[in-house]
Length: 190
Image 1 (cartoon, rainbow, N blue to C red):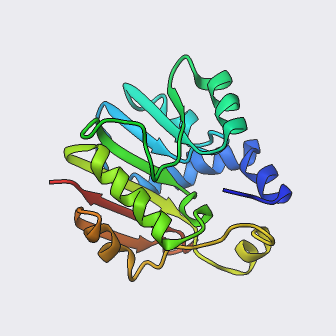
Image 2 (cartoon, helix red, strand yellow):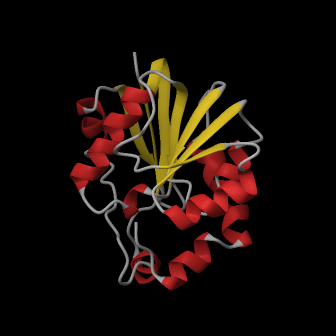
């Protein structure tokens, strides 16, 4: 979804990729078994993808922006399957993946209804026993400044578990990082 120039510069930087590798993914995926077949929804410039591709046997990424898809394919196409697709309308069969993940992208989805369709699609493409996990940012002063004239629709940690249950998931959990205030979530498909 649309990002302003400063936001695009940050998300495509090596500094952001290192933050993702060192801080975001370890916390977001703590105690999560990804399995062999993993789908990342909304990889953006690939900061998460570059870590995941070394952790799982088969990685698929679904990205909505065509230019970003071309970039990801040129960098990672030999090691990951990169689809040009909206996470709310995945061109994938039911029950394909052991896990579905998304990181710091759901706040770029313009409406709650669209986010809920992404949750429903994540549920649909998961195998029984699979996990949906990820993280996102929470609003604060710096976050709001970065998102000036940008899409910013943050998740409410109090209502997220119920939304995941409505999508079909069981045992949904959403919690906040004690220092950064970031949100992580996980839920299962039985």
